[in-house]
Length: 234
Ligand SMILES: [Zn+2]
Image (cartoon, rainbow, N blue to C red):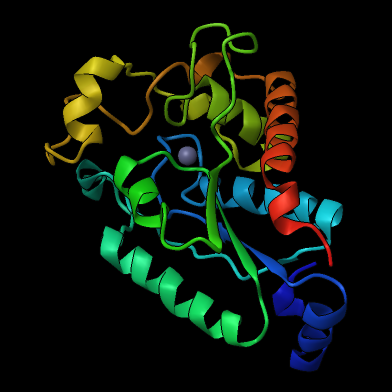
């Protein structure tokens, strides 16, 4: 149930009678190579948030569409980042309003592993829980990767399953940079663009819809497991 589709008095009644917890999807506006759209992380996190809402009856808040991105991605047009402290401040501000309206627990759902993005949302307060839906085991599903990278075999498979019409498989350019060689970029120490990098890491060319289906099911199971009690109805 999307809070933004309701009137204020419906929201008031819902908080009192059905469920007084809230999921807040947190996206990023971020490049995903030549083959996936900027909104990729938002599509996925909203999909998971909606199913979680069906399971728990918890309302879903309007998505926070900006997160923290790698400084090197400023060179890839459209990518838009906020500072970590800005993200923390937005979350603190909006949850303070909702607390006054009776919301008890806030679940921040994200699908973006930038360490500073995660740090900005971790441990804001006891009533705000962060869950990164990308944190599942991938090794038995993927062929060429053992874990998730970026716009990679895993992310592209999920996109092929959820929104195939927006995936440009013919435009895939693989330019793998090993995790150790990417550390400087990942921890925001290097803001130049790696040579030959078009925005993806790993092996998107071997992505399939079937792998995406298995990944999404696993994400749903682990999210429901980890978050059900926090969101459970009155
Ligand atoms: Zn992504």
